[in-house]
Length: 130
Image (tube, rainbow, N blue to C red; front, side, top):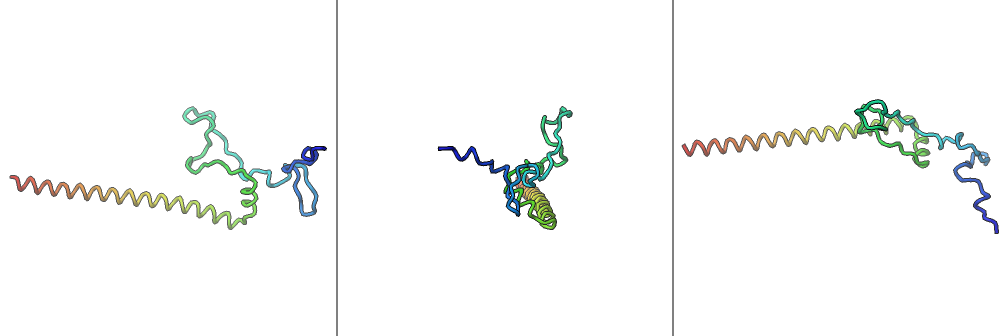
């Protein structure tokens, strides 16, 4: 018996096109091309970690998703859908920041009010004692 797995071409190399032909060059397949180019890394700055990505906003500099399903889904989107996704992502980041600021302001207001009530209460006790 002959092993059939060794005679078949690799699944990643053969791509079925509309005409039914198989391309053997993985570089010509748009799914094999990265969606985003990798950003340069910091290697000359001794303050940064070696290999850290160059970005002004490090918190939004995530690893690039490299699976084929994600690439195919992302490439199938129109420019309007891509811009809508980017706008919604930044809107969500803005709302999280706004909610954090409002929460911090309310906590500060509550602390000041509690301290003021405590001071008035102690002033009244000191006045009654004298």
